[in-house]
Amino acid sequence: MYEKFKLSWLSNLKGDTLSGLVVALALIPEAIAFSIIAGVDPKVGLYASFAICVIIAFTGGRSGMVSAATGAMALLMITLVKEHGLEYLLAATLLTGVLQIIAGYLRLADLMRFVSRSVVTGFVNALAILIFMAQLPELTGVTWHVYAMTLAGLAIIYGFPYLPVVGRAIPSPLVCIVVLTAVYMLTGMEIRSVGDMGDLPDTLPVFLWPDVPLNLETLMIILPYSVMLAVVGLLESMMTATIVDDLTDTKSDKNRECKGQGIANIGSGLIGGMAGCAMIGQSVINIKSGGRRRTSTLIAGIALLLMVVFLADWVSQIPMAALVAVMIMVSIGTFSWESIRDLKKHPMSTNLVMLATVAVTVGTHNLAIGVFVGVLLAAMNFANKVGNILYIGSKEIQPGVEREYEIVGQVFFASSETFTAAFDFKESLDKVTINLTRAHFWDITAVQALDRVVIKFRREGTEVEMIGLNEASATIVDRYAVHDDPEAVEKLMGGH
Image (tube, rainbow, N blue to C red; front, side):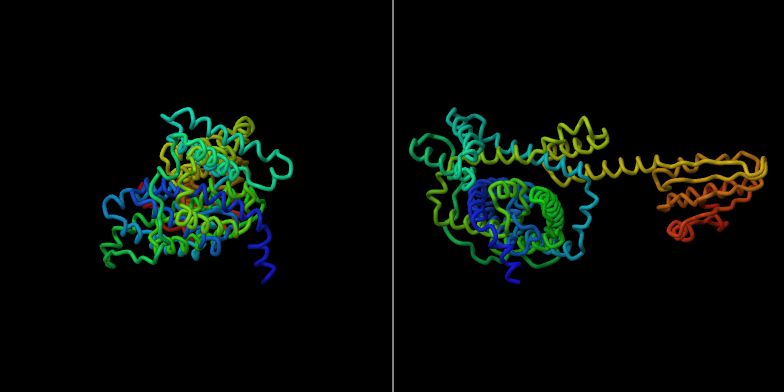
């Protein structure tokens, strides 16, 4: 037991502590910005980030992954806050948590196996582009000082690791933030800082139960939003977990992560915070800064709260240019540059799935829609490929008397028309044998295609015999086939 605790919490204490501080600093402006997007006070996002970070450190299924208030979730809250106010948002956050816990117990995370690698790559690239685009307002209509500070920050981030000894000991994003903050305070240059984004909270969070009527009307108001928040939150969390799995070459318990996200959102709602989920940008910062264990996430949450409440005067002095530099690093590190080179090597269908996922996600700013489109295209592409792997040959057993058709491949909705079209119903025969030894029937559409073939031959006065049907196919054919039921035959063939 102690060894497991030591591995999860104490085996990388130095790296987790430093990376946790970097993540905490980077979370502050994002939490404030997402609060503004949702139309609530900055402290709602900050309290949410604190609660979710700390709770997920204990309950999550992926160590080193950072969860907090996110832009994807904030975009879904705008209408609810505008029409019903903060209290209904807090109630929706609690319901979101409950739905996510249920999803965890139903093992819905197992559905991630249906998300292809090309969809994951498209999701990653789209997120990298969105992260970069989110920095553009800070680089538009500003003085040259902002560009100079941002470039200096990038130079520190990418150059500092090359210094002997110290370059590996301290995360370069942390050095970037500290150095640029010192320059900003010493020079007094007029550029935006964290303090310009909104007032930081000056008190610790307290327990809050949403002040809403506990009735069916309230449920009907918050349920649609909670469902959307739960789906998007879990989807982004599962995709982020997959990416962190790849970065660290380790596995995660995604169903536990579903439950953990739910518990964290309930905790957030009970202290006045908004719903959140895993953050790919902050998770990449954490991993690249040396964070590997649950300790890094715990320290990030605690440090965030302590800094905004007790060190607000210092934190408010951090120039936004420093954080923009860190986030540009994240976008560059997140983007899968190999996917551009792979466009020449991969099949066109795979490239289209990846590019469509990127285009739809960036165009809608909705990760769920982008992934849905990607999964749908990947499924259609797969069905088309498998549907084309169908061979139907025939040979005469007795000329003009008997013919045998041999079916090789998968028969389902995408290949059913090809299956039906391969038979010659006008040939005058006494008997047709359909050899299904090397075929497999998958769905009702396939069974209906078989029914049509048998019925059409029988209407031409031809005896039909099916041989070699495997056990799995026989189960679905015996259950749904109607070619031996006269009434059902008339219905299937349209009465003629």
